[in-house]
Structure formats: C-alpha cells, structure tokens
Image (spheres, rainbow, N blue to C red):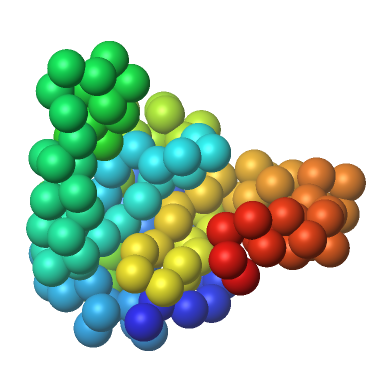
Length: 143
C-alpha cells in the first residue's frame, strides 16, 4: 500500500527519486500518466491492468467515456527505476502537471501521485480544502 508524502527535486535531465518506501509496491517498471487535478498518477503494472480493465469496459458510444479513456492512455508511459532510484518523467507529462523543479510524491493507497510542490501546497491548504465539509459529503458515498 502506498502511503505518505515525500518531497524531491527534478534534476536537469527531468529525473526524480522515487521514495524508497514506494519502490517495492510500484516495481522496477511502472506506468505514469496524466492524473486528475493536474498531477501525475503512477501505477504498478498490476494496478494499471486493473485500471485499464475498468477503462476498457466503458461504452465506446459514450463521448465522455471515450474522452476519459483517451486522457489516461494518451499520457501513459512506462517508467523504469534506475540504479539511483530515479525515474525520468517525460517532458509532456512535466508540462501537463506544471512540474519544473520541486515535486511532492504522495501515496494514495493503490497509486502514487506526483505533484508540483507549490501546486500540492495550494491544493492542501486550509483555504482550498475544508476536510470537515468533505467528510460530511462522503456519507453520500457510503463512508
């Protein structure tokens, strides 16, 4: 299970260290793609297959479903951890997420999220996130 929040920086070649606690769960090779909220999602190969299966089950005749599938698959790339524990994040994904130097990598159970550090700080600020309000709305989802 992927848990926690870790800060790292990109090097000049666009590489970032993967938190050592995430390497075992993600594996030596894993999938990174555009995520929601302008971050990147990282899935182990096994979790990607599970996610891919769900996406493939969406109806081809539904415009929103087609767009949703395109969004995730068009940005997906396989990343391999090098001997120093880093991956290279392709330029198109860095551009999408607005990542230039400092990143925050967050464990979200079955996936990791890679955020521009400033965007993550803004996203999680008290001005943007009312946890009590979110919690009260989770009852609609059965939580």
